[in-house]
Length: 189
Image (cartoon, rainbow, N blue to C red; front, side, top):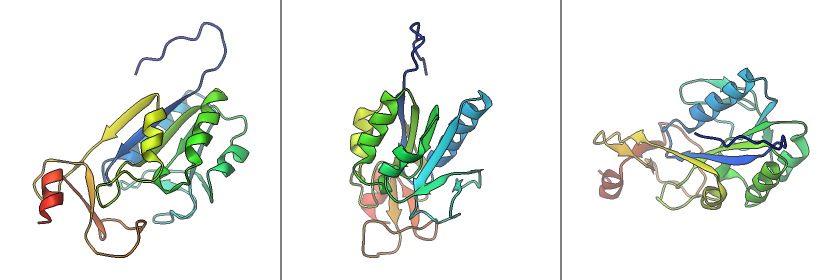
């Protein structure tokens, strides 16, 4: 990724979005970018929705068990209150946040903060998920990751829910979801 040099000395912020299906490595990439920012001695903070307690109450944990401490928040406005004197902010599972997350990311970027957002771009029905379409639209950089289809081995972009349960948001892991390509998702094999 090429970043234009800023000759004015003024800190410029931007928004990066990492998206894809479940098991594509979104959180892994978010953690990698935040660790690199820390190596560069930048002040970082990571936030996640309080409802995401799959692996840990407070830490962000990837499927590969990489861990980074985070702050769980009930709503996106809280991020603005807690993001003081930070140069890089990570936001995991953005699809679970309220619609204000879009405005929050814009404000942070305008403050000169690098904002790295990770989330599912589609729900288990293959439809755009929560605020992610709008975040993708305002992003300065987008990384779309793919998993491997468990049925045929092609690239997977949809999170197939194996157990039918009510509600759009049902937290789960490999017991509940699996990555599928478009054909295997629609064939329901």
